[in-house]
Image 1 (cartoon, helix red, strand yellow):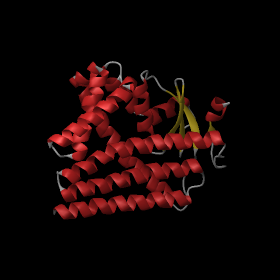
Image 2 (cartoon, chains in turn green, yellow):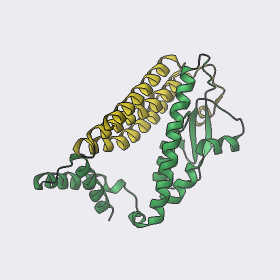
Image 3 (cartoon, helix red, strand yellow):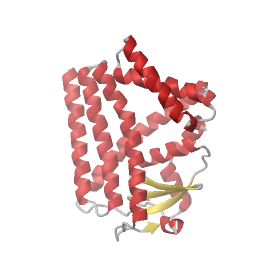
Length: 161
Length: 108
């Protein structure tokens, strides 16, 4: 079942990227997708039926909107720090605990944190994420965990776990 | 009108790319430079790609530009993790203004 899902997703991707609906093109896409599915299928989610639950898609849209908004904010934040004559930075690496379990959800959270204002995920060891922060606003672990993971963690938990 | 939107989006993208490049020069150490390089440059490129989409409309070229955006997001973030982690393990020093380093104990 995993292999079929990977095949369908790569096929959709191929059709979108070539955008030509002729028979030879679709055949080439099918062969390429089959090879992709054969190689990478085993690294995919174990429970692909989660794709069919509409509630997860709804939370995914909510997450996407929050993510894009955070992304735009991040840009203005970096632009402000770069252009300010005194450069208001206070960098450091902080440790943040995550409650997410699945690898896919953790990857997504790490990627979201990298795109939010002033933070880059450096590494994940066990349950802890190490995050480089350009301006550390708080010394209290509970406070900065909330600031860094923000609302992403709850949204990702709702649709990816 | 269509053209106007494309010009605005592409200009914004180029502007953010310039901010990213300024950050690359001005910020003190490798990790901070990586911040400017990932965030500004990624959204700058996304903005340029959206400008391409508006210019060509929904079609072959437009869809290709649209599909490039998620790929760009994933590759940029993953590259940022890999570069930051690799630099730390290689022994790149953090700037002296840094106030905290929790990662040091974890690496040992």
